[in-house]
Amino acid sequence: MIVTIDLNVIVEVLLGREDREVCEKILTLCKRGRIDGRLPSHALPTIYYVARPKIGNDKALIAIDELNDDLTITPVDNALIRKARSLNISDFEDAIVAASAVESKSDFIITKNSKDFAASPVPAITPERFMRDIDLSFGR
Image 1 (cartoon, rainbow, N blue to C red):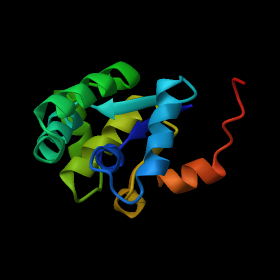
Image 2 (cartoon, one colour):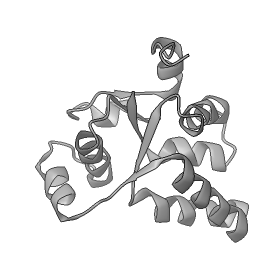
Image 3 (tube, rainbow, N blue to C red):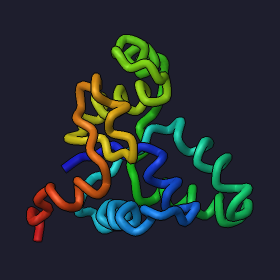
């Protein structure tokens, strides 16, 4: 199963927010190869920018390295930007995530804000719903 992970899922973990545990489970499934996690490349500098003031430069860079190792980074290029602009999604960053999910043939977008992806061609699901409803028994 291929999933595109919205950067808000990763920020939950790095900043130790309330929903951190379920988001950590998603990232662990990616690390262990149970799901094929994708992350649009534009998310990496944004994650660093948000995390650095809270966790420090060294830990933020380590987090970037781990994400780069554990997830497939989907390039955001001219064609993907054009695809994002063609989607009926008002938030440009969300449109990039949706276009990236289409490009990587993702089954789902995992996000804390699934309502923001109502017009996405790829269904969006919260981490909680993903862990509750999606059968991950394959590959055991």
